Image (tube, rainbow, N blue to C red; front, side, top):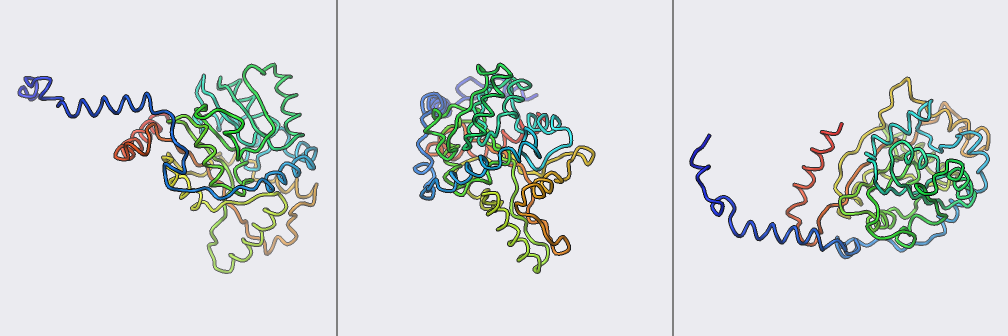
Length: 330
Protein backbone atom coordinates (compact mmCIF):
# COMPACT_ATOMS: atom_id res chain seq x y z
CA UNK A 1 0.00 0.00 0.00
CA UNK A 2 1.17 3.50 -0.83
CA UNK A 3 1.41 5.26 2.56
CA UNK A 4 1.98 8.57 0.85
CA UNK A 5 -1.53 8.47 -0.66
CA UNK A 6 -2.99 7.79 2.79
CA UNK A 7 -1.45 11.00 4.13
CA UNK A 8 -2.99 13.22 1.48
CA UNK A 9 -5.50 15.74 2.69
CA UNK A 10 -9.13 15.67 1.59
CA UNK A 11 -8.53 18.68 -0.65
CA UNK A 12 -5.53 16.99 -2.28
CA UNK A 13 -7.57 13.92 -3.08
CA UNK A 14 -10.78 15.71 -4.09
CA UNK A 15 -10.04 19.00 -5.80
CA UNK A 16 -12.51 21.85 -5.51
CA UNK A 17 -13.26 21.95 -9.27
CA UNK A 18 -14.08 18.22 -9.25
CA UNK A 19 -16.35 18.56 -6.23
CA UNK A 20 -18.09 21.57 -7.74
CA UNK A 21 -18.65 19.79 -11.05
CA UNK A 22 -20.09 16.76 -9.27
CA UNK A 23 -22.43 18.98 -7.24
CA UNK A 24 -23.67 20.60 -10.43
CA UNK A 25 -24.12 17.19 -12.02
CA UNK A 26 -26.19 15.85 -9.15
CA UNK A 27 -28.30 18.98 -8.93
CA UNK A 28 -28.93 18.71 -12.66
CA UNK A 29 -29.91 15.06 -12.28
CA UNK A 30 -32.35 15.95 -9.52
CA UNK A 31 -33.91 19.02 -11.06
CA UNK A 32 -33.49 18.61 -14.79
CA UNK A 33 -35.96 15.76 -15.24
CA UNK A 34 -38.04 17.63 -17.76
CA UNK A 35 -36.13 16.28 -20.77
CA UNK A 36 -36.95 18.43 -23.76
CA UNK A 37 -38.57 16.59 -26.62
CA UNK A 38 -36.26 14.45 -28.68
CA UNK A 39 -36.39 16.75 -31.71
CA UNK A 40 -34.66 19.57 -29.85
CA UNK A 41 -32.31 17.25 -27.97
CA UNK A 42 -30.89 15.39 -30.91
CA UNK A 43 -31.64 17.49 -33.96
CA UNK A 44 -33.66 14.58 -35.39
CA UNK A 45 -37.18 15.20 -36.60
CA UNK A 46 -39.77 12.45 -36.82
CA UNK A 47 -41.65 12.16 -40.07
CA UNK A 48 -45.07 13.79 -40.38
CA UNK A 49 -47.54 11.36 -38.88
CA UNK A 50 -50.69 10.07 -40.57
CA UNK A 51 -52.81 7.65 -38.52
CA UNK A 52 -54.41 5.95 -41.55
CA UNK A 53 -52.15 2.88 -41.27
CA UNK A 54 -52.77 2.56 -37.53
CA UNK A 55 -56.52 2.65 -38.11
CA UNK A 56 -56.12 -0.07 -40.74
CA UNK A 57 -54.24 -2.19 -38.18
CA UNK A 58 -57.14 -1.78 -35.76
CA UNK A 59 -59.66 -2.81 -38.42
CA UNK A 60 -57.54 -5.84 -39.33
CA UNK A 61 -57.48 -7.13 -35.75
CA UNK A 62 -61.16 -6.39 -35.27
CA UNK A 63 -62.02 -8.34 -38.42
CA UNK A 64 -59.83 -11.35 -37.57
CA UNK A 65 -60.24 -11.31 -33.78
CA UNK A 66 -61.85 -14.75 -33.62
CA UNK A 67 -59.31 -16.20 -36.08
CA UNK A 68 -56.37 -15.07 -33.95
CA UNK A 69 -57.94 -16.52 -30.80
CA UNK A 70 -58.62 -19.82 -32.55
CA UNK A 71 -55.05 -20.25 -33.80
CA UNK A 72 -52.81 -18.26 -31.46
CA UNK A 73 -54.85 -18.52 -28.31
CA UNK A 74 -54.44 -15.68 -25.84
CA UNK A 75 -50.87 -14.66 -26.75
CA UNK A 76 -50.56 -13.36 -30.31
CA UNK A 77 -46.87 -13.86 -31.00
CA UNK A 78 -45.51 -15.95 -33.86
CA UNK A 79 -42.03 -16.64 -32.45
CA UNK A 80 -43.04 -18.61 -29.39
CA UNK A 81 -42.59 -21.67 -27.22
CA UNK A 82 -44.75 -24.78 -27.21
CA UNK A 83 -45.66 -24.03 -23.60
CA UNK A 84 -46.67 -20.36 -23.64
CA UNK A 85 -45.61 -19.87 -20.01
CA UNK A 86 -42.02 -20.57 -21.08
CA UNK A 87 -42.30 -17.64 -23.48
CA UNK A 88 -43.74 -15.29 -20.87
CA UNK A 89 -41.17 -16.27 -18.23
CA UNK A 90 -38.42 -15.77 -20.79
CA UNK A 91 -39.75 -12.30 -21.53
CA UNK A 92 -39.86 -11.34 -17.84
CA UNK A 93 -36.14 -12.12 -17.65
CA UNK A 94 -35.24 -10.70 -21.04
CA UNK A 95 -37.02 -7.39 -20.49
CA UNK A 96 -35.65 -7.30 -16.95
CA UNK A 97 -38.94 -6.69 -15.14
CA UNK A 98 -38.56 -5.95 -11.44
CA UNK A 99 -41.18 -5.75 -8.67
CA UNK A 100 -42.78 -2.34 -8.32
CA UNK A 101 -41.92 -1.09 -11.82
CA UNK A 102 -44.42 0.87 -13.91
CA UNK A 103 -44.58 -0.80 -17.31
CA UNK A 104 -46.23 0.07 -20.64
CA UNK A 105 -47.30 -2.70 -23.03
CA UNK A 106 -47.40 -1.02 -26.46
CA UNK A 107 -49.73 -3.12 -28.61
CA UNK A 108 -51.03 -5.25 -25.74
CA UNK A 109 -53.47 -7.49 -27.62
CA UNK A 110 -56.04 -8.95 -25.25
CA UNK A 111 -53.82 -8.24 -22.27
CA UNK A 112 -52.69 -11.73 -21.28
CA UNK A 113 -48.91 -11.00 -21.21
CA UNK A 114 -49.66 -7.86 -19.17
CA UNK A 115 -51.73 -9.89 -16.69
CA UNK A 116 -49.03 -12.56 -16.47
CA UNK A 117 -46.27 -10.00 -15.89
CA UNK A 118 -48.32 -8.21 -13.24
CA UNK A 119 -48.96 -11.49 -11.43
CA UNK A 120 -45.53 -13.11 -11.74
CA UNK A 121 -43.18 -10.12 -11.83
CA UNK A 122 -45.22 -7.87 -9.50
CA UNK A 123 -45.20 -4.91 -11.89
CA UNK A 124 -47.88 -2.34 -12.65
CA UNK A 125 -48.86 -2.60 -16.33
CA UNK A 126 -50.70 -0.17 -18.58
CA UNK A 127 -51.61 -1.52 -22.01
CA UNK A 128 -52.70 0.14 -25.22
CA UNK A 129 -54.27 -1.48 -28.29
CA UNK A 130 -55.68 0.06 -31.45
CA UNK A 131 -58.32 -2.70 -31.73
CA UNK A 132 -61.72 -2.23 -30.13
CA UNK A 133 -62.36 -5.96 -29.92
CA UNK A 134 -58.98 -6.58 -28.29
CA UNK A 135 -59.68 -3.77 -25.83
CA UNK A 136 -63.04 -5.30 -24.85
CA UNK A 137 -61.48 -8.77 -24.47
CA UNK A 138 -58.60 -7.36 -22.41
CA UNK A 139 -61.02 -5.65 -20.04
CA UNK A 140 -62.83 -8.96 -19.55
CA UNK A 141 -59.54 -10.77 -18.86
CA UNK A 142 -58.42 -8.16 -16.33
CA UNK A 143 -61.78 -8.31 -14.56
CA UNK A 144 -61.69 -12.13 -14.43
CA UNK A 145 -58.21 -11.94 -12.87
CA UNK A 146 -59.39 -9.23 -10.43
CA UNK A 147 -56.39 -7.08 -11.39
CA UNK A 148 -57.91 -3.69 -12.21
CA UNK A 149 -55.71 -2.20 -9.47
CA UNK A 150 -52.58 -3.53 -11.20
CA UNK A 151 -53.38 -3.74 -14.94
CA UNK A 152 -55.17 -1.17 -17.08
CA UNK A 153 -55.84 -1.03 -20.81
CA UNK A 154 -56.97 1.69 -23.16
CA UNK A 155 -57.93 1.74 -26.81
CA UNK A 156 -55.70 4.12 -28.73
CA UNK A 157 -52.82 4.67 -31.12
CA UNK A 158 -49.43 3.90 -29.59
CA UNK A 159 -47.83 6.53 -31.80
CA UNK A 160 -49.37 9.12 -29.48
CA UNK A 161 -48.39 7.75 -26.09
CA UNK A 162 -47.91 11.23 -24.64
CA UNK A 163 -51.60 11.98 -25.32
CA UNK A 164 -52.67 8.99 -23.23
CA UNK A 165 -49.97 8.76 -20.55
CA UNK A 166 -47.84 11.13 -18.50
CA UNK A 167 -44.33 12.13 -19.56
CA UNK A 168 -41.50 10.18 -17.91
CA UNK A 169 -43.98 7.86 -16.21
CA UNK A 170 -42.60 4.43 -17.13
CA UNK A 171 -39.65 2.30 -16.11
CA UNK A 172 -40.20 0.07 -19.15
CA UNK A 173 -41.91 0.31 -22.53
CA UNK A 174 -42.05 -2.99 -24.42
CA UNK A 175 -43.24 -4.27 -27.80
CA UNK A 176 -44.00 -7.97 -28.26
CA UNK A 177 -44.28 -8.33 -32.06
CA UNK A 178 -46.29 -5.12 -32.23
CA UNK A 179 -43.53 -2.68 -33.21
CA UNK A 180 -43.63 -3.87 -36.83
CA UNK A 181 -47.21 -2.67 -37.23
CA UNK A 182 -45.93 0.89 -37.17
CA UNK A 183 -45.45 2.63 -40.51
CA UNK A 184 -43.90 5.63 -38.70
CA UNK A 185 -41.21 4.06 -36.55
CA UNK A 186 -39.12 7.16 -35.87
CA UNK A 187 -42.26 8.94 -34.67
CA UNK A 188 -43.10 5.92 -32.51
CA UNK A 189 -39.65 5.82 -30.92
CA UNK A 190 -39.96 9.51 -30.10
CA UNK A 191 -43.28 8.76 -28.43
CA UNK A 192 -41.59 6.07 -26.31
CA UNK A 193 -38.82 8.50 -25.36
CA UNK A 194 -41.37 10.96 -24.01
CA UNK A 195 -43.07 8.53 -21.62
CA UNK A 196 -39.94 6.72 -20.41
CA UNK A 197 -38.26 7.83 -17.22
CA UNK A 198 -34.57 8.74 -17.44
CA UNK A 199 -32.82 5.40 -17.07
CA UNK A 200 -35.90 3.57 -18.37
CA UNK A 201 -35.80 0.51 -20.63
CA UNK A 202 -37.15 0.14 -24.16
CA UNK A 203 -37.53 -3.48 -25.32
CA UNK A 204 -38.53 -4.65 -28.80
CA UNK A 205 -39.11 -8.25 -29.87
CA UNK A 206 -40.08 -8.44 -33.53
CA UNK A 207 -39.35 -9.66 -37.01
CA UNK A 208 -37.01 -7.77 -39.33
CA UNK A 209 -36.12 -7.93 -43.01
CA UNK A 210 -33.75 -10.75 -43.79
CA UNK A 211 -30.59 -9.88 -45.71
CA UNK A 212 -30.36 -12.30 -48.67
CA UNK A 213 -27.40 -14.67 -48.64
CA UNK A 214 -27.61 -15.04 -52.42
CA UNK A 215 -28.31 -12.28 -54.91
CA UNK A 216 -31.06 -14.32 -56.55
CA UNK A 217 -32.93 -14.46 -53.25
CA UNK A 218 -33.38 -10.71 -52.99
CA UNK A 219 -36.39 -10.53 -55.30
CA UNK A 220 -38.11 -13.45 -53.57
CA UNK A 221 -37.54 -11.96 -50.12
CA UNK A 222 -38.83 -8.58 -51.23
CA UNK A 223 -41.92 -10.23 -52.72
CA UNK A 224 -42.68 -12.08 -49.47
CA UNK A 225 -42.10 -8.94 -47.41
CA UNK A 226 -44.64 -7.10 -49.56
CA UNK A 227 -47.14 -9.93 -49.01
CA UNK A 228 -46.66 -9.79 -45.23
CA UNK A 229 -46.97 -6.02 -45.14
CA UNK A 230 -50.12 -5.98 -47.22
CA UNK A 231 -51.83 -8.98 -45.64
CA UNK A 232 -51.06 -8.25 -41.98
CA UNK A 233 -51.04 -4.44 -42.16
CA UNK A 234 -47.37 -4.61 -41.24
CA UNK A 235 -44.27 -2.65 -42.14
CA UNK A 236 -41.44 -5.14 -41.64
CA UNK A 237 -38.52 -3.12 -40.35
CA UNK A 238 -34.96 -2.86 -41.58
CA UNK A 239 -32.91 -3.76 -38.52
CA UNK A 240 -30.05 -1.40 -39.28
CA UNK A 241 -32.43 1.50 -39.85
CA UNK A 242 -34.12 0.90 -36.48
CA UNK A 243 -30.75 0.73 -34.71
CA UNK A 244 -29.69 3.97 -36.41
CA UNK A 245 -32.91 5.66 -35.29
CA UNK A 246 -32.53 4.44 -31.71
CA UNK A 247 -28.92 5.50 -31.40
CA UNK A 248 -29.46 8.76 -33.25
CA UNK A 249 -32.31 9.63 -30.90
CA UNK A 250 -30.03 9.14 -27.90
CA UNK A 251 -31.00 5.69 -26.65
CA UNK A 252 -28.12 3.64 -25.22
CA UNK A 253 -28.08 0.20 -26.86
CA UNK A 254 -27.80 -2.50 -24.20
CA UNK A 255 -27.91 -5.47 -26.51
CA UNK A 256 -29.20 -6.91 -29.76
CA UNK A 257 -29.66 -10.66 -29.93
CA UNK A 258 -31.59 -13.56 -31.32
CA UNK A 259 -34.35 -15.05 -29.20
CA UNK A 260 -32.79 -17.83 -27.15
CA UNK A 261 -35.30 -20.66 -26.90
CA UNK A 262 -34.02 -24.22 -26.77
CA UNK A 263 -34.99 -26.49 -29.70
CA UNK A 264 -37.21 -28.45 -27.31
CA UNK A 265 -39.10 -25.30 -26.31
CA UNK A 266 -39.39 -23.67 -29.74
CA UNK A 267 -42.74 -23.91 -31.51
CA UNK A 268 -41.02 -23.63 -34.94
CA UNK A 269 -43.41 -21.03 -36.41
CA UNK A 270 -45.95 -23.69 -37.43
CA UNK A 271 -48.64 -21.54 -35.87
CA UNK A 272 -48.20 -18.95 -38.62
CA UNK A 273 -48.88 -21.59 -41.25
CA UNK A 274 -52.03 -22.64 -39.38
CA UNK A 275 -53.28 -19.05 -39.44
CA UNK A 276 -52.58 -18.78 -43.16
CA UNK A 277 -54.44 -22.01 -43.84
CA UNK A 278 -57.42 -20.90 -41.77
CA UNK A 279 -57.75 -17.42 -43.23
CA UNK A 280 -55.99 -17.61 -46.61
CA UNK A 281 -53.95 -14.56 -45.59
CA UNK A 282 -50.47 -14.49 -47.19
CA UNK A 283 -50.67 -18.20 -47.93
CA UNK A 284 -47.47 -19.72 -49.33
CA UNK A 285 -48.37 -21.32 -52.66
CA UNK A 286 -44.97 -22.58 -53.83
CA UNK A 287 -42.70 -23.94 -51.09
CA UNK A 288 -39.99 -24.92 -53.59
CA UNK A 289 -39.34 -21.28 -54.48
CA UNK A 290 -40.04 -19.89 -51.03
CA UNK A 291 -37.24 -18.11 -49.17
CA UNK A 292 -37.93 -17.24 -45.54
CA UNK A 293 -38.01 -13.42 -45.64
CA UNK A 294 -37.56 -12.33 -42.01
CA UNK A 295 -35.40 -12.79 -38.94
CA UNK A 296 -36.49 -12.39 -35.32
CA UNK A 297 -34.47 -10.29 -32.90
CA UNK A 298 -34.69 -8.72 -29.48
CA UNK A 299 -33.48 -5.15 -28.99
CA UNK A 300 -32.99 -3.69 -25.54
CA UNK A 301 -31.89 -0.13 -24.89
CA UNK A 302 -32.02 2.56 -22.24
CA UNK A 303 -32.98 6.21 -22.12
CA UNK A 304 -29.96 7.97 -20.57
CA UNK A 305 -30.21 9.11 -16.97
CA UNK A 306 -28.82 12.53 -17.87
CA UNK A 307 -29.75 15.27 -20.31
CA UNK A 308 -28.04 14.87 -23.67
CA UNK A 309 -27.73 18.66 -23.89
CA UNK A 310 -25.63 18.89 -20.74
CA UNK A 311 -23.24 15.97 -20.37
CA UNK A 312 -22.41 14.19 -23.62
CA UNK A 313 -19.04 13.32 -22.07
CA UNK A 314 -20.89 10.93 -19.75
CA UNK A 315 -22.61 8.99 -22.52
CA UNK A 316 -19.87 6.40 -23.01
CA UNK A 317 -19.37 5.81 -19.27
CA UNK A 318 -23.12 5.44 -18.78
CA UNK A 319 -23.18 2.85 -21.55
CA UNK A 320 -20.30 0.90 -20.02
CA UNK A 321 -21.91 0.96 -16.58
CA UNK A 322 -25.24 -0.24 -17.95
CA UNK A 323 -23.58 -3.08 -19.84
CA UNK A 324 -21.75 -4.13 -16.68
CA UNK A 325 -24.96 -4.17 -14.67
CA UNK A 326 -26.73 -6.21 -17.37
CA UNK A 327 -23.85 -8.68 -17.43
CA UNK A 328 -23.90 -9.15 -13.69
CA UNK A 329 -27.64 -9.80 -13.72
CA UNK A 330 -27.44 -12.70 -16.16
